[in-house]
Image 1 (tube, rainbow, N blue to C red):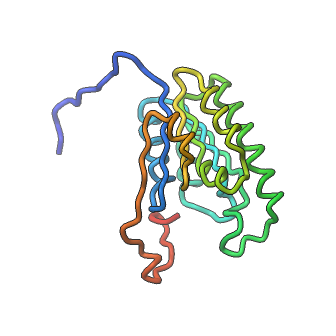
Image 2 (cartoon, one colour):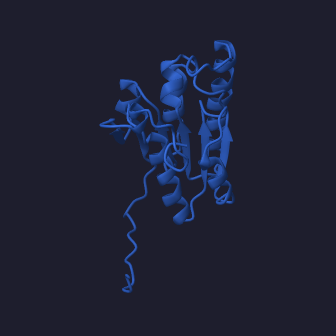
Length: 188
């Protein structure tokens, strides 16, 4: 067990970074949730807006309630547009992310939060549920010390170019491809 006091690092200058987590592997939202846990550990306030999720329960929904004073969570989606038998028409799918991007911008500019996470915004952009000028405006409107995290597959080059940090999650192997059902605590 570690008994020596831990050193706390403090940057000479705090910056509001733009972070993109993209790719076809599992773990983009999980990475963002890890950043949320780190931020809470530093006493920061976080707003999480999930653009596509909201039709199936996931463990993070209840887990985030446990850190509620520090994390405000908004489920705005109707599930993944056009897959897994999702019954909602395109116009309903588009209406929710349109509201979500406005909500995210409002929360980002409110001064109440240190970090805004827009989960699955890259997917929403690829599916034309939000438009590139809206996403670029969100990035460009970011206050200097605000941290902005954008997740989802198929991040556009224009978004990547404006980010400070970009990570790509690549699938090497996935249990789903071995006919193993999604498992709680790992997949949702």
